[in-house]
Image (tube, rainbow, N blue to C red; front, side, top):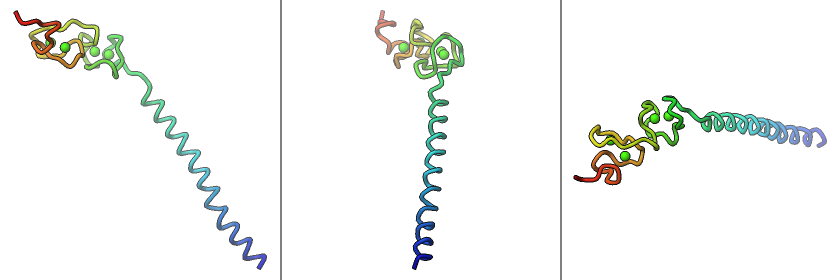
Length: 92
Ligand SMILES: [Ca+2]
Ligand SMILES: [Ca+2]
Ligand SMILES: [Ca+2]
Ligand SMILES: [Ca+2]
């Protein structure tokens, strides 16, 4: 009877402690991934990070740029292009 209790205890505790260690390493991995994702990137070095720069491959395009009304690009990152950007490109 005593031997059976020991067997049950080790059977229960084995997977439990393994699960705890797995949880710790999973959490650490998640934190590392999250930090990497949070790391700001400014590929075109215009001073605007990728999450706020609608084109992080063109230093002339950023939220503080002037809309150029005939280049088919959203120069100032307000999701309005050329004539659609009526504030910057009013109809003549
Ligand atoms: Ca940028
Ligand atoms: Ca840019
Ligand atoms: Ca434009
Ligand atoms: Ca625009």
